[in-house]
Amino acid sequence: MRTLSLFVLFIPLFFSCHQSSTEISQWRGPNRDGFYPDKNLLSEWPKEGPELLWTYEDLGNGYSTVAVTRKKIFTTGMFDSTSYIIALDHEGKLLWKKEFGFSWTTNFPGTRSTPLIYDDLGYVLSGLGKLVCFNIEDGDLLWSKNLYNEFLAREVRFGMTENLLIDGDKLFCTPGGELANVVALNPKNGDVIWQSAGNGEPSAYCSPRMIEINGKKFLITITANSIISLDPENGNLIWSHDLNFPHGIHGNTPVYNDGYIFAMNGWGHGSVMMKINENGQSIEEVWRSNLFDLEHGDVMLIGENIYGTDYTTRHFSCVDWKTGKVKDSIKEFAPGTVISADGMIYCYSYKGDIALIKPKQNGFDIVSSFKAPGVKRDHIAHPVIDNGKLYIRYDNALMVYSISENKNI
Image (cartoon, rainbow, N blue to C red; front, side):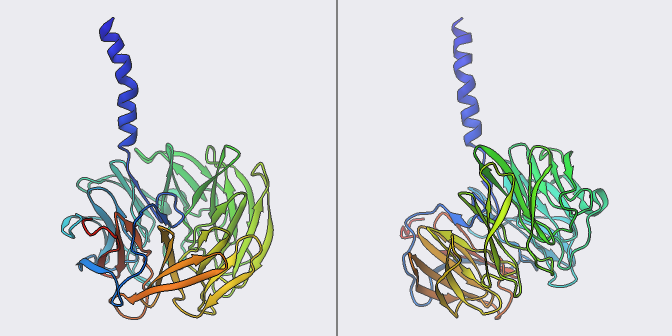
């Protein structure tokens, strides 16, 4: 009887320990919204920028950013038209490099998507539509799917760039086929759980996100012309809304807060704020803006404001979330990518300028800036912050800066 009692007590302890050991590293931070949980970061930088801890200069061609875990740093790169998953330690030493298929070599050649790390497994999508699951210890491939062969995916202009999403027991991706527009797979073996026709539109580079309204989850993504909502349990299309953008390029993840959802078009077509009804079953437009017409780089929602850059006018702006009113705007650091940590915004411009920006209720202050190494173009891999370090990927190189007030980190 005593043995049985001890066993019963042990069961919840085992599951508690197992669940707490699950480690997730994914696109744009823990919640896919650009916020990183680090605290006690530098509130300003020296004129030459924060301390450069190390640089690794053999990543191959690519625009993937990094997935950082307790033991490793993961990214991808192209060597001789072949895609590789790359694992480094936290001192910048190569641990392993594993091939996972041919790379996108047409326009902007190189790897695209960032590895998704979930517990002891990793997932990544190639520009040519090969989705692979790998062991994070040694990089061995465990299973793979070819989205073109299995789901009749349609070709897109710049290759597939989606950053994969896991929620619960499902891995989601967007082949963009007419019938298999969005699919849910078993993360352990790649088996198809469901496939949805969605709106039947081609994929549009968007990395999806999960939102929750009154306890019900909804899968949100953007295809060629529309932002759509699917039931993650079965793939049923709940609503769609035409974004009125003719070019089919939506590389930014929608931003959601308290019933409102914000989506960005590109190249002169601005952005759209929408409101979802209280049961999540329908959507209506609230306002449109000419700003934030960025093909990729995302925005940050901080307080009551949206902060980010636009492509056409080359401004960094602060815009009211509810009304679209411009509160502050400067012609610097644009176009560029934004993330946030410890109450500050980090903007990485396409030309390689890295700015530390303090958001305010009615605007912002530019606190510090410096220029990353590299030529003045295509600095478009998203920055990452982890454990007091700022990770900047540019082409073949990964640069790691110390941004913590604690110099022992």
